[in-house]
Length: 268
Image (cartoon, rainbow, N blue to C red; front, top):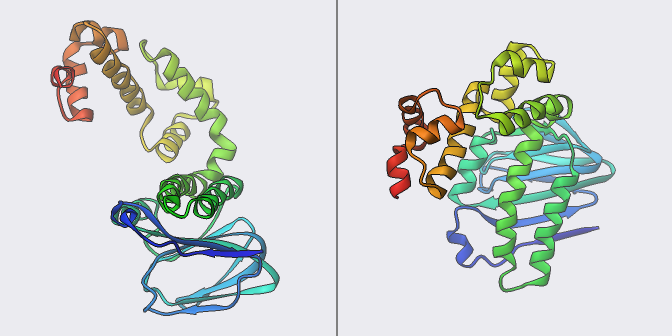
């Protein structure tokens, strides 16, 4: 089975992220590209195996492996047998460049995926949108492309750790989300998760991009924003309700994370 989509780009071409093309091939043929091919390419393999070459190096690409090749980067790839099922996507827009860079996809990269099922579902939803709606299909597909890239980021950068430590981190997050209004210590998180202080701090930074104490503070700020918007409680009352020791400390952290004071947020 194979198909290719090269949708006509209309006003979605002005979107920060939009879909330029996508396709799949049950046996990806030999392809060689040089600097003249200016578009970034994302591949992931679901069956069989193939070989990717760039910069004088060779990489075997098998099921569960993904590839990113930036635009203008010479490379070639070819199957190693009769089956090499590859799915590929070409994103466009300045927003996609920024997001890909944030994901670590600003250079050629071969990576292992924790799973391909979540990507398959979004890939086929984009395919179906393009097939069923010739007028607005690519606008729908471009919206799904953002979801695809976010899911890809999860599966590349955090998939392996999530498979083994996600239950531990999840226990910590559930505790914080339900009891943020009281004092929660790092030792308590260690007890709940079964992890050491060093390990839990490293995993919080890896999975959530923040330290445990920062996650607690941000969760309290999140709750405070809801109270500022939906109640007549004073700043002092809100600070106490969400677990901050003083209103001055609450206002300081609110300004740090939100860029404005609680009062300005409420009045805005």
